[in-house]
Amino acid sequence: MNSLNRNLVSTPPYTERVIQFGEGNFLRAFANWMIHEMNKKVGFDAGVVVVQPIDQGLVKMLNEQNGLYTLYLNGIRGGKVISEYKIIDCIQRGINPYENYTGYLANAENPNLRFVISNTTEAGITYNANDRLDNTPQSSYPGKLTALLFKRFQTFNGAPDKGMILIPCELIDKNGEHLKDIILQYADDWNLGHEFVKWINNHNTFCNTLVDRIVPGYPRSRIDAITEELGYKDNLVVEGEQFHLWVIEGPKAVQEEIPSKSCGLNIVFTDNMEPYRTRKVRILNGAHTSLVPVGYLYGIDTVRESIENKDVGGFIRDIIFNEICPTLDLPKEELNQFANDVLDRFRNPYLEHALMSISLNSISKFKTRVLPSVLEYIKRKEALPKGLLFSLAALIAFYKGDRNDTPIALKDDKHILDFFDALWCNSDNIDEICQTVLSNTTFWDVDLTQFNGLQDIVAEYLNDIINKGMKIALERIIK
Image (tube, rainbow, N blue to C red; front, side):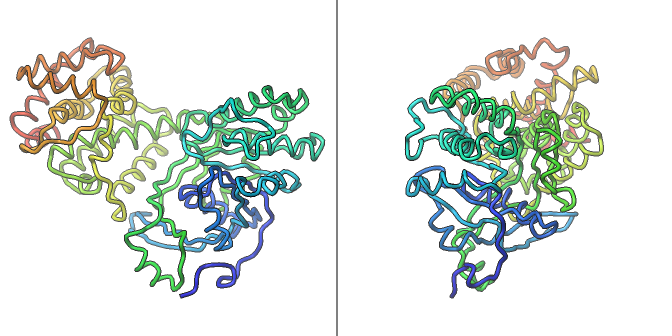
């Protein structure tokens, strides 16, 4: 069987306008797919040069396929289950700076280069004091990028129109600002000069971003069937869900250069991404965290099964629409649309998302993802969010470490596991247990017993869960 390459599939060349640090599954299923769509639908004409950011990577394999790969998008769209695939052809070539540093720096001389995209993991945007300008290459991604930008500055004598739009996709807060700060630190360390610093500040745009698409990656368990379906061999097949969201915080000029709107892409340009970050954390992540102890103690093992269950699914829908969304400041229509998309994602038949895989560090997750909704609901409504507090009671029961006489493989920091182990071993008084947990400010940064009625309702729910079982306890709250 033939392998995928440009001899097998005829594809047009594109002008190299994007340099991309990272060749992994996420960028290929996310940013490269969007570039492909804009190339095909509105003539964006953006070819991508992929830089391998670490010594070991996929660039050799990518070049063997001439930058081509097959993307499957599986999930629910418009209420329908959809699985579709296409060959993505925007990547023109890949380069390994550990083998060809001169070739890597030569990209700086390309007058058409305009965008920098990256996903080098959360640890990628880091400062390494040992990096030097004369390293070949620098160890860190920001170090490599600084060397490239300085070469570009020199090549074009600091021309304003040769600055770059930098769009990092690493999952850290204010990723663009953080990347810029490190580049300026290297500029100082390496004595690159005041004019270079001015050029970075005035003629390069660093965008903060929020990215959202589940990318399971290479479908190893199904690759034989996929190869038979495709009729060619592709070592870089990647799978992603149907849903996608890219929030880009930057000046309006950035939006004018990325023609996403006419392609139907879910790219949001904004001057303040915090409402979108809060929406994702509260609705998507908050619903996940709220679901875990309830669904698992109910006897369910996956997210999809939980949402399809009448009781558990109804409970999660209720807390999303009636307790979480009312605490957020975006328009109601946007919140409802995002919430419905989240539920479709949870029901995706192509993803088997185990509840226990989400349960890691559930105490800190509840604090950052769910507790802000609880506190905001109390503030705005002057009432208690019963569904979210039921989930808190379920979380306390979950950390007892038992489901129908079967031990739960709890995963959290040792001091948290030790706390709950001692708590459940030394007391069977539900009120005392609730008081001890809720007043633990090392968990929540606030004494939750100070809120009128909160301890009482959590204790009531916990008593039902422990003594009557999750099914009966949940039935009582959703009536």
